[in-house]
Length: 213
Length: 96
Image 1 (cartoon, rainbow over the protein chains, first blue to last red):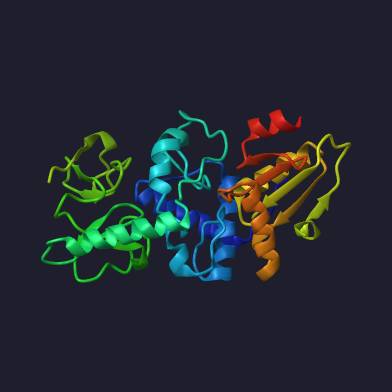
Image 2: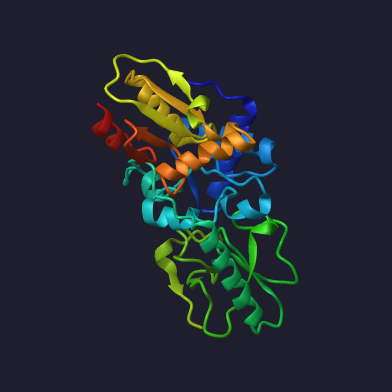
């Protein structure tokens, strides 16, 4: 089976790869898999108006599907734990270099809707309780932080849209997500684990330290 | 009944009755279908994302009943065993 892909699919896949590499991410070396997924993403964009995850069933309402717009909020945690994202569109460097094998689909990390809503409310409450003199915005996809009136139109690190940002606070009893600092260039990101590669200076994960508050 | 939405794929003699709930956009679902096709296993499948309104709800309820995490692909074997997600080793072990 070797399906032919439309030129727009080939083009879109190449764009995804370029953007991934620029941000320190990698597409799956299984080219046919990434083409199938790129095709699925384009179908979803036509169908829903946004890049809904091709391997998940969305509700078709952008506000409710925000966390599963590709790249999803769960990609980086899945890359850390399994070396692949839920769809296996993205993989870790280990997988790219053939040092780790992809055996099949990984478990779903996305919480059930009620749990998701509870977490959203929790982080909104934390942000409201913060003492920042200016709103601090966090990209939920990659952990990028920016202190400014409103979130940027597009995350400069991972290209996620403005709607993927949440207000964030360092104050009170500490941030809800750990803060990581690149010891080489000082880049800061709020995320579960440090990124594989610093998106700014390309230093490896081992050059990050948890930033004390 | 959700069965009316299933498409039949013919194969060689089938040891099992197989129903695959899938999404038309999903890479793992395509891999699952390829596995069944390459091994000439007969099966029925439905692309849940291509259904609309009440028919989609009805089929999705069935997926939920079989696999509470509602993930795709969901393979139901002989109306009994369920394999959630595609994993070639698991498919091989259960089906060949």
